[in-house]
Each structure stands twice: as structure tokens, then as C-alpha cells.
Image 1 (tube, each protein chain N blue to C red):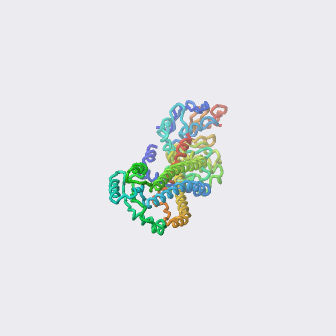
Image 2 (image 1 turned 30 degrees about the vertical axis):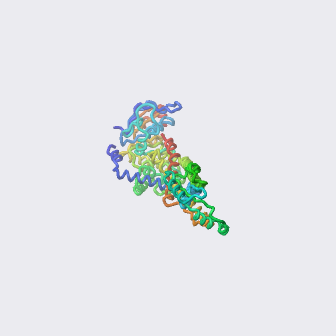
Image 3 (image 1 turned 90 degrees about the vertical axis):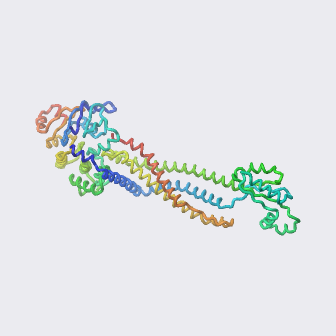
Length: 242
Length: 316
């Protein structure tokens, strides 16, 4: 069974704007997938549907065995605890220390203090911020904040990681490290979906890529073909991912 | 992934219970921490709540002391019947026996003219004047206590026409009126208490509402990472509970301070009436009830403010 399955999914917002149109694809468990496309292509809308932050207007969205269109309000928190979300704007709590921010999913899950501390430090270590656990987010650079957000997303060992532009504020070497981290999670059994503009990064990772344009899936390919596609300059696909 | 999912879901009930308790403990102490970290704001709120709780508590103390005072006072006769001049002892005794047979009458006491004269001499200060008076001008007197003091007027009316009776005097009417006033004060106290309880609910509710507004981002993020409505609501409910608890304790201190302040003048006043009245404060049970009341109102106010508001904050 697919970890994520979209079947002719459409999403229309209140203003009448079609964010997604007839979107159909499947993502297997432990697969790492990049979603790319220009601004307004529907990447964030797609992630919002997967995170149960929005309901599809039409079609089936099935994630981790749950039909999200039929997921009751009371079932949403338990479903979200199975996800790790990385936001483009970090969404850190500015009055809480780095440690407290990263520990939040564990607090929500009711994990014991010692176990939580151990897991938080392990997560901070993975993103290279172990020495900053007592600092407030305000004292960090934008890139460091993003790494805190990533640590928060992985700390509860989620079944599915959703990352919206996770490396937008990071330098290339750190971006590669973070992506390697996501890949390691995928190797360990976690499904990872990353929305990104960064085509070079996508190319280096050699993972499956979904290309969206105006809410439609216009391409779904494997990394070995990316160079040849990129070479077709002037094609709609390349424009979309550039 | 299947195995992974099973591990995630099949949490033994003990672990789930521990997690639930940990979550409550976290909410309980984080709510206290937030109050402690804003001592001025929260201190003022607690002071207002304490005054609102102390006012009905002080009223309760006043009513309890008044009731205690009236209960301790010897019950005077409800009616005094002055028999006709020259009535014999036999007539007085027969009439008293007849009255004892009346179901409305609780007790009848007879007082001979000689006894009445002796009392008058000792109380009136006219002993010398009475010594030179010829004979005894006082009649036989019957003191009546009624089963239901509120019937005093009806009973008096029915006895006034009896041939043995010369005059009827309401003796215990003042006590009945005082008891009535005390009952009215007690009822008023309930009304004022209820109004102040509503005030406490609103004050706590408003405080929690403001707290929710300042923590909107945190609430949204918490919901995004899987916090349930109950989890998000819990710190606010505990904040209400802490506010109510500290306000209840503050009210207790205010009541005790008031008692200490009033103790001396009440004692001096009581001494001037030949009484040894001392003010009684709140009992242990009343004190605990006051604190529990504060906690309940704090919790209730927080619930009213948070339940609907937090449900409405949905990242979906």
C-alpha cells in the first residue's frame, strides 16, 4: 500500500482559485520525493492536504492508510503526531528555548522527561545545534532556525516527513547535509516529501521528482533523467523547475 | 512501514497513562510558571479575585456570628397575658392548664402577683416607693411560648377576648423580627455571593482570553504537531485553577485580617452590654469550601473562555 496516494484530487479555495487540478500520484513507504514547480504551482497546497490542514475539494487523499477527506476532527491530532512538519517560515516559539521548541512534539506525545531530553539532544546533534539548546530562536540566524525546525520535525521519529522549502535559507553545504539527513531517514523507513525550488539540490539527491504547474502534475521522473530534461531548455517542464 | 506503525500505535496502557499524567503535570506546572513570571499582572488579578471572594465570606461570618448570638440568647415569652384584677390562683392555674391543651402553645409559665412584685422591685429601682404602697397592684401573669412564633398575632387576637384576660403583650416579637432580618441578610448574602461568583468567572475568563490571544502562535504550532484540543486547553484550565486557588487563599487572609481588625471593638461593645461575645471566624470546613469555591470558579471561568475559542483556532 502506498504511503501517500492522490487520486484525481482538486483543491479550490474560497476565492475560486484552483490550487490543484486532477492530481494523481502515489508515493511508496520509505521513499524520498521532491515536489518542485514555480511559485503558485501548488506545492504548498499539496503539502497542506497531506498534513490535514486543508480538505480536498474533490478526489481521494490517502496518507499512511488514512482517508484524509473522511478523517474526523478528533482523529486529526493522532494523525498529525505521525508526521514531521518542516515549515518555510520555521514557526518556532520565540519565547521558548531551542531545547523547548524541539521538545514540543515529545511533550504533546507525553514522552518522559529523560527520554525527551535524550531524543532532543540527539535531534539537535543531527542538525549541528547541540551547543545552542539553551538559546532563544531570536539569537539564531535564519538558517539555524530552519535547522531547529528540522530537529523538531524529526525528534518524534515520524512515519512521514513533510518539508516545505527546508533549505531555502541554508548555504549549499548545509543544505546537502540536511538533505542527506532526510535521505538517511528515508533509508531507515520514513517517507519524506520535500517541496523545493532548488533544482541543483534536487539533481544532486537523485530522488524521484514530481513537477507541478498551475496545480497540475506535469512530470514525474527519476533523477538520472534530470540532466537531459534540463537540457531541453525552453520546454515547459524546465521553465517550471527553473 | 507496517511494523513501524504497529509500534507507534500499540502503546501499553501503562505508558499511555504515564504519558497522560505527564501531560497534566506539564500543563499544571507550566501554568503556574507563567503566573509566577508575570507577578504584577497576575498579582493584581488575584487581588481583585480575592476581594470578590472575601466579601461574601465576610458576610457569611457576620451572619454566622449573628445566628450564634441569637441562638445563645434565652428565648423570651412570645406572649404575656395579664389576667383580670383579683383573679384567684385557682382561676390562673385552670386557665394555664387550658392553654397547655392548645396545640399552638408550646409552654405556659404562671407568675403570681407576689413573684411579679418581687421581680419588679429588683429590676425597676422603685423598691422604696413600692414598700410604702398599699397592697399589691399586680395581677397574675401567664408567659406563653408558641410552637410557631409567626402565629403570635393570631394567638394574641384569640386570647384577647377571653374573660380571664385583661391585657396581652407581645414579648418576643423583637426576637422574631431580628431573626427575620437575619434570614433576609442571609438570603441577600446568597444573591451577592452569586453575583460576585459571576464576577470571578468573568474576570478569570477575560484573563484567560487575553492569555490565549498572546499565545496564538504557540497554540497553532502545537495543533500542527498533533496537540489535541484537550491538550491545548489544559494549561489555560490549570491557569484558571491556580488563579482561583491563590485568590481563595488571599480571600482567607483578608477575612482573617478583617476579623483581627474587628475583634477588639466588638469585644468592647459586647462588654458594655454585659456580654462576653467574641467573634468567630471561618471554620476549617468553611475555609476549605472558600478555597474550593475559588478553584471551581477559576476553572469554570477558564473553561468558558477557552473551550469555544480554542476549538475555533484550527490550522486546518
